[in-house]
Length: 243
Image 1 (cartoon, rainbow, N blue to C red):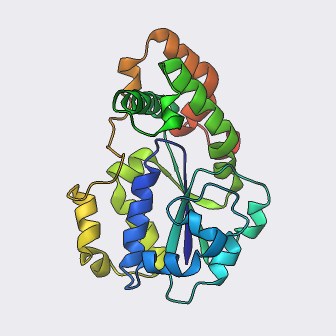
Image 2 (image 1 turned 180 degrees about the vertical axis):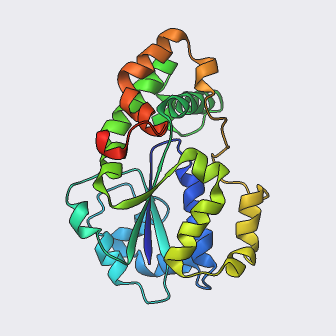
């Protein structure tokens, strides 16, 4: 089975990808070995992160054997053609999303880290204010996250579900892979990940709603102006069809 992990930036998509990877490994076949075997030639550059069009994904899925499982992580924008080419039982799309206020604040703080510590994060380094973080997140929601959610292709998880209710995410993955609970419990790497013993690069569990304490009232008003419907979606007030 091939998993596509799409995430709104700063929505714990990296953590979701690690959870997925460890569940794949719990089946007894290393997803990294599978990836090395099937992502060759021009596709080799996508082993760590898939940055381009997903039209080659069915070709990758066709190379997988019955016991092969792997994942690709991406932030790519949704293309209407994906509704057809990715709609297969052996391809599962996982989507992570986050309240745009918290995501914008996290993106701004990542930008500060990038500049202060000279990290090679050009996307975040370009964000110099809370207002710019809100603008960036609003564009990402419109161009990528909302179209992915509305496509109906994927299983969606909120940031809080991924970080605070990981057991529910694991139940979904366990069902996809046909794993027993015992197999997950026996995976030391998965248990280390869940306990925090194993660090995930550039990921820290944030505090929900912290943007309301940090943003000025003007920024909060601007956030509502730019992202109001998505905020209501995150709050459970409207469904994905109303975005």
